[in-house]
Amino acid sequence: RGRAFGLAVCVVTGVVAGLVWLGEAAAAPSLPSGFRLVDYATGMGLYNLTSFEFTDDGGLLSVGKDGRVNFTPPGASPYQLTQVPSIRDVHDFGLLGLSLGNDYSADGTVYLLYAELNGDGTQNGHAVLSEWRATPPLRPTSFTLRRTILAGSKTSPAWTQNTLSHGIGTV
Image 1 (tube, rainbow, N blue to C red):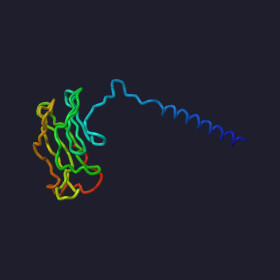
Image 2: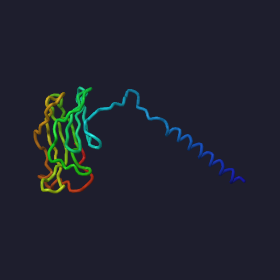
Image 3: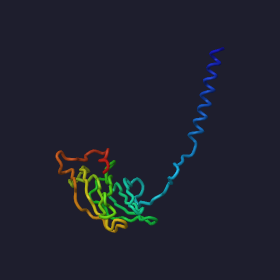
Image 4: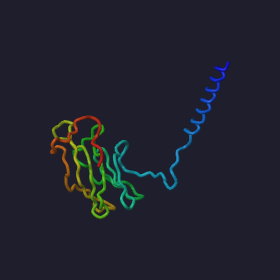
């Protein structure tokens, strides 16, 4: 009899705890005070957006796995600045890293990290870190390659990309 009573208490306690937990889990998520959820169009399409950076005036520079570089002015529609050539857009690879230079607002410097095809007819590739220039910085209409900082095909050992998953990371 004492054992049955103990078991009943445990069951009731478990049910009540479960109901309390379900009530908390069902509560709608909320943002901390001072934060707001915003929607930004990138023009990248489903599953393509890999990285983005806000400019000082609220514009949005974004990159896609397929090598696209887009810009969205504040309150306006996105447009394409360039298509980085020879992107190894395979599984987890592609154009993955974007970082604005320290003086982006003055000089438009942008760094990109991506997997580039080897050009040998296979899907094999190598990592590339490159420096680009967005002009003018706040409303770019041009995006040009300044220099390649690191080409994985020329490093020793080579920074190869010959697998189907686990990309190169970000800048």
